[in-house]
Image (cartoon, rainbow, N blue to C red):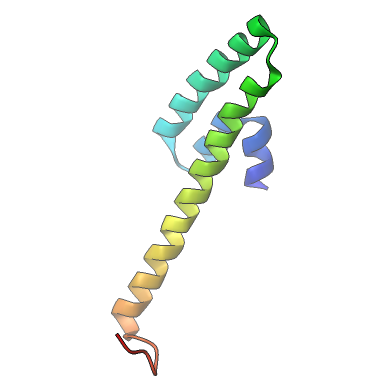
Length: 84
């Protein structure tokens, strides 16, 4: 659901995901490319801000997953049968 919100309202999705600075940067991108897209009649420019938001949200979730796996390995040790 957060990805749908990131497509339509990228800065709000980043704020809800806890990425304040990325949301500010994305709001600037959103307005800038929306205006430039209207001036140059290039609707694809609007897609830059949602793409940034979707990638930022994906990377944040991957970081969380990675941290959980590392914490579990540190707490419980390597899985049985694991060889370095």
